Image 1 (cartoon, rainbow, N blue to C red):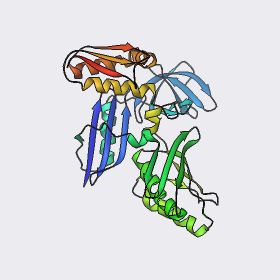
Image 2: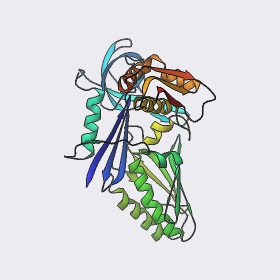
Image 3: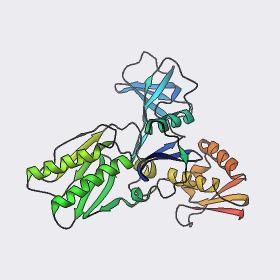
Image 4: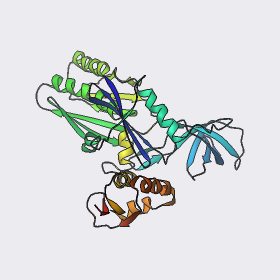
Length: 330
């Protein structure tokens, strides 16, 4: 049985593809950034050998690769071909392609519905709160049978490190299946490096690679991989048109939630809070500044509408966790 669960909150959409009661894919959309397939118009800021850099109406910069017959300072219609992707220590700006005309129907809600339709044919999405969706992503490791699978983002890509006790082939077999599951679950693209437990037998290394292929066949996204070398290393490459779940959660940080994630989650909590009167969000100065910025005004307005109450954000460096929401009369 296939289901699609959805969980909407101010500025952030969540969806899960569920097969026989088990979540197999997690999808996130954050509406403040350029989205794959979104149309827009921007001013050509500068032209370089890599392409033309265009600044959209929100002040964000996108790269249109290749040559376009438009002078600097002129305006150009575009369609986003790759979203912004945050990596440890840096943000890769969105890329776009030039188009003749902008379609007024291509808005963020339409793009989200299109994405949901692509998950499964003939399945109607069902709203369902999903607050514990990111436990494995935040932990950075998974334990399956005799294998411990650690993973961490780097600028070069995602690195998996396999550990365990006992037979290396058994450890690697369990890890191959689990890694394929995690790549699909967290919608990870780009370069992936897997450090299996080393095995001398080339035939056994080939078996592990084939086990990975079999497990990865459930993921509809095509990929290429290398063989497993004598040191246990294997590379997997997929296209990367969107940020993975890990990219969304951590941004340019290595293992800590990004300020953006904290802000979205606090607005989500405030929108769902029960009681009467003012909602007060207390968080760090950096997160509070982000939440009160002009770019986030629409998110604040949406949150107040859903909560049915006014909202204020207070900066407090001594607050615990990433912050909390207080309701005047709960």
